[in-house]
Length: 278
Image 1 (cartoon, rainbow, N blue to C red):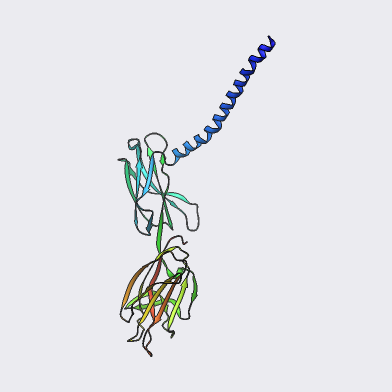
Image 2: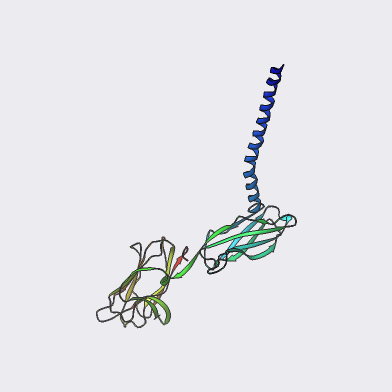
């Protein structure tokens, strides 16, 4: 009889141990799942935000589309922008605008002004329950940066940043100094694969001699990508040249005048369209 009791007790004990292991195993698996569910509820559950574009130029108007899963349960929707102070303070979400939820989809607008990246989310207040928050969306922001702000790794004598009159208008310039008698002027810059376009106004300084002429040439990673026609006193030419995100960027101004006549070719308001530069 004692043997019978022992034989019967072993399966019961085994079942108890098995049950205990099963419960412990389920708890270990369930905990992370609960955490994930909670995280989804906090960001993204019930509301989704999309941007009309993945990149924009500073000053462009962005369209951001918020989709609320259950609009009848929602009250208001607030567009927020992530702001990082330039000098002091902590990054935080700042309200851009708030509107009533009237339908499933709401389009909100903002002007792209953030440095390099514009980051947005929406917060939806409800008639009952905690507010809903969308997963943030990012938009790359390109901006026109003065060429003088880009690091220069080489420059010939007389190639300077200055100011000059070109065709009667005053510009901040790069190019030949009015006092230089060189045949050409050149400089190299390192945008570091952060810039996709160059713009400026080509011409010669109004102090250039009658009958003089000059040209401007542009290189990217030592490959020629642009050469101007002859530039003469009394003319100006706006250009915008696309760039394939070069590491190096070069300019060359050349005096093509006859002997005894001098021209000072320059670029007015030279700028690069860049992102990722502080």
